[in-house]
Amino acid sequence: MHHTTRSRLALLTVSIIYGANYSIAKILLDPNWIGPNAFIFFRVSASAMLFFLVVRRFPRIDRRDAGIFLLCSFTGIIGNQLLFFNGLKRTSPIHAALLMVCTPLLVLIFRAMQGTRLNHWQWLGCFVGMAGAAYLIVSVPSAGQQKASLMGDLMVLSNALLYGYYLLRAPELIRKYGSLPMLSALFALAVLPVLAVSWQEILLFDAAGFGLREWLAFAFVLIATSFLAYALNAYALKHTNPETVSLYIYLQPLFATLIALASGKDNWTATYLVAACLIFSGIFLSGKKNPPSPQKS
Image (tube, rainbow, N blue to C red; front, side, top):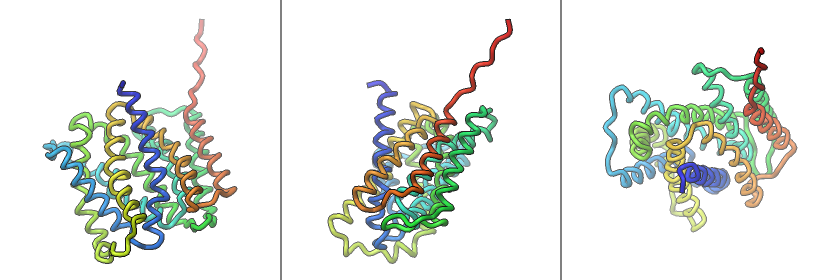
């Protein structure tokens, strides 16, 4: 099977995993079985162990790359996951999924900040898409069994901002060190900072009341959402570009919405429809090319 086909299958699997994660994580977050920071500590620790068991070594990091490793560990794991889970606890699954779709637009904006020239369609798409995100945030409606909050939405959007930056910087480390060794180092670097933030919630964590449903949800988040999803994403980044990887985030709201509605974790509202139309219109516009200028005879 060609690398391109494998990359697409990997990204599709990641989209399904992340789409399911919005509702599955709520099984433990909403009844306060576990705090969001403690949840992240267990995610990071489990992934660090699993990646080390697979790779069996940490890469020898060049001093010139130490700063990029720390930056990617923060944007891709520490800040990214802490913001997402704290935001998800404070908002609804569909809210969070729609806001995460802004990641490709944020990747474009980062490209522009790095010197890439965007055409007027791309700028218009970024404006329309981010306007949809802003509308979703300021509307803060009641959503089914969940209450969306301004703080929760801003946390999820900030997580998308960090993740977009991670997608741009990670490929240079993957090319030099390999995807799995890089992830082994990134998760190892994240364990102590996350522990410093979450130790109080860890002391309060008590799994004695867990039933089969809670243990399955816990295992899914620790193994599938963390270890497996990051490994598949890194594989895709090695064989394709950040823009293509970010494009598959478009599928997350579809899977997240279907799973949230089927499980009764959320209800579809008119606000979601308006915001989704704006965000996806922005994404469509950002993908348009300027027509070629006529050549003078």
